[in-house]
Amino acid sequence: MVYIRRARRAKTAAQIDLDLPGLSDAKRRPLIEEQLREQTAREAEVSAARQDETRPQQARRDEARAADREQAKRERTAAAAADTARQTLACEDCGLEQTAGRCEACSYRRRTEALIAKAGMVVATWSADLTDQNVVATQRPGTPTDALDLSNRLSGV
Ligand SMILES: [Zn+2]
Image 1: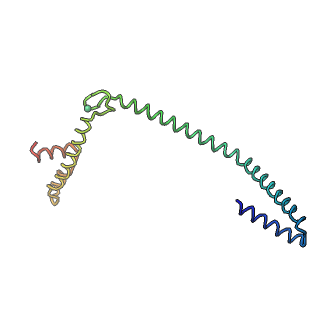
Image 2: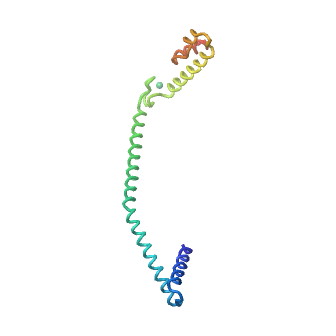
């Protein structure tokens, strides 16, 4: 900021030297000070006017931000309530209470069944004679239970 003031003072002094050449230093110095003061006052006015212009915009932005925060808070509260309600649900497979719809054991059992079904589909694809149209029609991986049955047959279960 000091270099800006110095640059401004030098520019003002140069302009005064240009406008009023041969002015004595005693008359020149107060003139420079006066012009610098006026310049500072004008800048302060412009700055204040700019702030007055932007104040309503800032207020609207603050309001919008506050509304967004309120909305986010309501959504978090609703999500927490929904999560709490979901936690109270019984397991839909075995009926165990407070399991959010599925207990751990049933989750693992279902995942295991799904993996076995996928493995069965892979086995069915490998073992099929893909040159025989009848085989392709019947061996095509179908529903997971078909694949599970096939997998069980192949593994001797
Ligand atoms: Zn269960």
